[in-house]
Image: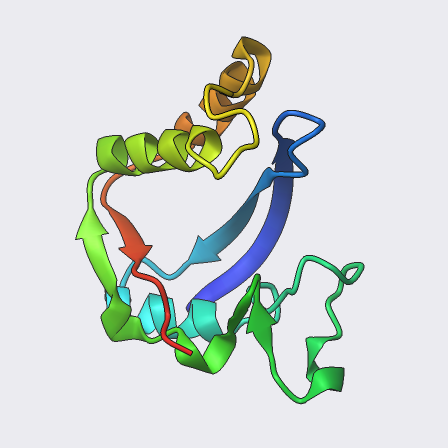
Length: 135
């Protein structure tokens, strides 16, 4: 076992934004390096979800396995880079608040930001983030 899905949680953002953060919890083989773990993640059925279909995703029916809005085979291990947990927190807060809102001053309410702290509290060690896949 390099990687096994052991659970997931969803943190909903403000009700009118239709935004959420899914935290998928994986057990990993700590003797594996980052590339082996990322390869297992990208190959895991738990990572292949279009977020429009009910779980489990049936994206294979469309002949393109996807993750969110990206075709999964466009997400490459080499596109991930090491970041810090603090930087990942800043990026997540920026994503939550800096959308193309019709009200440019809109920010997620305090109760939502409080719920996002549950995501931050799960962080441990190094973090990896992917740059935008190319089509």
